[in-house]
Amino acid sequence: MRHKPRTSHKVRTSGKARTSRKARTIVAATAALGLAAGLSGCGGGTDAESGGVSLTVVATNYGDSVHKNSEGYWDRVTLAFGAEHPGIDVDVEVYDPDEVDEKVAELVERGEAPDIVQTDSYSEYAAQDLLYSADEVLSVPVQASFVQSLANAGEMDRAQYGLPFTASTRLLYYNKDLFERAGLEPPKTWDELLADARALKAQGVKYPIAVPLGPEEAEAETLMWLLAGDGGYTDSTNRYDMASPANVATLTWLKEKLIGEGLTGPVAPGELNRSEAVDAFLTGDAAMVNGPLSLIRQIEDSSDSVPYGTVPLPSRDGKETPTMGTADWVVAFRNDEHRTAIGQFLDFLYADKYVTEQAAQYELLPVTTSAADAMRADKGHRSLWKGLDTLQNLRLYPVAETNWSEVAAAIRKRIGKAVTPEGNPQEVLESIAREAK
Image 1 (cartoon, rainbow, N blue to C red):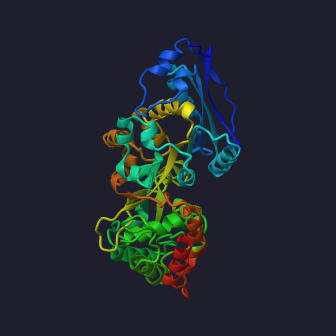
Image 2: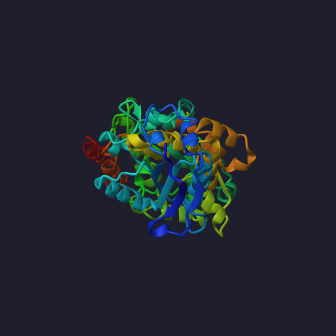
Image 3: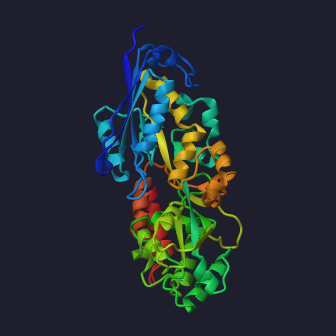
């Protein structure tokens, strides 16, 4: 059996986030042993007999102007993997979020699909039968380690194609100084939220609560409120249910109460984007805003250093409701010659060490139960504890629906009109429901 004399494990950042990094090389004197040992529970594959494998990975950059981009993370993973599996090359290209999907589509169109892609969706390629299911590439322990709510969200037709890579949740952030000045406690029901907003307005707060339903990311803000009102984008069978009575009642309450009483600030919610709402919170102009866990990092990096607390968005009656969550996914494209190597790399990627590192660096939630338990027990991750408490009860976007991107676009375009003085929540929701069919 002949093996390649050298293997390289390379991470390259492409697009707007591009930086230069020399590829490192690892001598593959024991390539056969490295490939033969520790095979995942994924069945056969011819790559182990081929004398060396080159895996291609396309990944998403999570960095910004302050924090490192994701190149370093992938570099550490691939170099450590290469030390244990010297017969497998791993070449990672890291792209900015707005570039990943286009790049992958180009490669698939050319018949050059990457072996592994890490991005925010999976349904399009799963529907075309281009992806391995989780049980075809992962070992049983790794597949069983995923947080159940995330594993369920990665399923299509009862098979899991989306492997959760990162997760986040949305919480209600409140300004502790403004609340203390008004003699308030964080709300637990909609009645308390309304009373707090009224008191904050009386104190002269510009945005008692910012409600960004503008075109930037209205689908997230909307889902938070719908879930808090015992509704959501889907019903108990995970089918679209946009214009449900619960959803209509929620938007009607927002329109008539918070927005109708002028408690959401000087900018109409349908014209207010999330970034603007967050800026208002960072500068002390907004007393409350819904935001992702990454807002913690923005607050820490901000020169304004707003004192903040977080709570789940209150439900109508104070009872526990699902929390809005988001996730990014890893998918494995079918390539029988590489199937075993893909499984080995993915098993390695989901070790607690790397799951925890990715979550901690970018204020995200871990996707495995063991990593979540470890972070919950570590005071060094205290800022994520509220988010960790929501993991088992997350409700994500209906990403298994192949038309979700079109439905999300309709929500961004129309939902703000539902809560204007002349708006009709039911008509708007019904128009979005027609897009979902």
